[in-house]
Amino acid sequence: MPWEILKWIGLIVIMLFAGTAFTGAPFVPSRRKELEIIFKKLYKLSKNDLLVDLGSGDGKVLKAASDFGARALGIELNPILVLFSKLRFISNPRIKIKMNDFFRSNLPAETTAVYVFGDGRDMKRIIAKVEEQAQKLKRPLFLISHAFEVPGYKPEKTCRAYFLYKIEPKSK
Image (cartoon, rainbow, N blue to C red; front, side, top):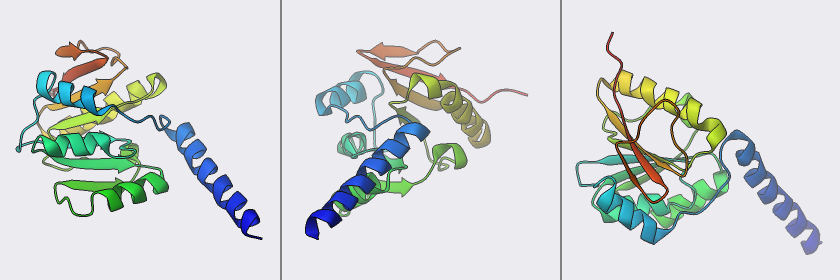
């Protein structure tokens, strides 16, 4: 009987991870050392920043941002990773996690930077949403993209496999 329950739990976990892979990029953990480098050289985070991590996974990006003094918001679809991150950062008031679909939500008004380890197939949708949000906030947003370039944009800076873009609101 206990093995049967464990098999069902395992199947549910696998389905949750597989399901989010179809709606976004699969979970791939970020490397702590690389995050330290990019937050020093590519985009210098400070206490004035609110970094939003799209698909925040296990929260490594959020933790690194917090270590640099920034506030961080993770947006994640996978309920297991949301629960894990919420428990991991329960005592850190600078880090918040939301189970949400980025494409169906708005960025907080204080957002300064957006981090994404997206998927090449989603970059057009991601940039369109970030452009929409910059327009709505009436100010530029910085987009940090890990591994994928943004079609139609030239990076402000690059560092290793990371690209920094300044997304300006469109003038009417």
